[in-house]
Length: 343
Image 1: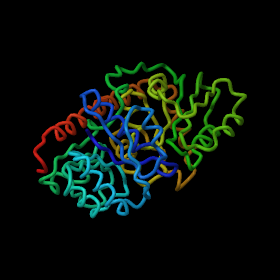
Image 2: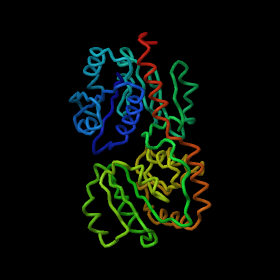
Image 3: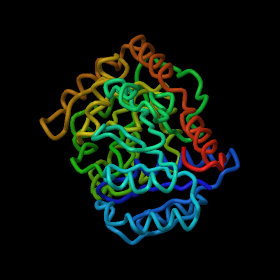
Image 4: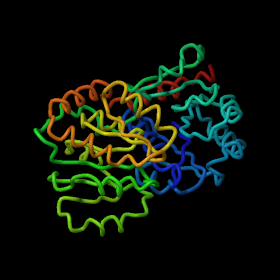
């Protein structure tokens, strides 16, 4: 049995839970079950619908030190051999307490402090900046985009068909769209140029009905509330406009050329590295300036340049093959099956 500690709500949105579910699915294919440990019940129903058990601690998601006794007791009672943690709220004290009781595996992309854990995962494309190898001599490291924890649907996507012009456009903004990126993009892009525009609104996006009503006269614009099979939209799209985060790695696996923007500090290294490596163009940060005209300029540059889109598509799929969750799951199952106690 694997145990996962993560949360989902209208502030942190869906990213942490979704990548942990991808790992849980991969572990299930290897015959290992997973239980999710949550601060509250906001994500419980969603996780249970995916077939996994949940344990709710009834604690504050943004104060993980306050749950230390409860989760340590739980880990001890269940003799849990491995605990995967995916949260920015961890502290060194919290991790130290848990590491005395089980093999702690932490998903990092911020490098906030030295994590006292058994295994550290950083699938970010900028992982080398953190110099993990020099600082974690005794810690198992899983680093780089080959460990990007994507769902099985993103494995073996095949080469992307690159059309002469962009016919199908995909707009993505994450779970909340707090800065109204979807509305801003739709306001400036040349909507009539595209045969089809799919707009994916996240779980916690509150402006869905308003956005649908504003653009209801456009027959080529289609709005989707929390699309369950988002990979279909990504594979169909000729170009995507997306916020930073794991979505960009999903687009890479599909080979779908993209333009990225950011609205949170934890996205900045990600989008800038994609830009530096000439894989995904970065239009800017929504918190700093109005970037929508720049998004449109980049989009129009790509519109009639299929050779440039093809070059980007090839680079994307070389970076991400979609099998990261399987690689992580194999390592977790290996730890869970040791039966030899802490190392």
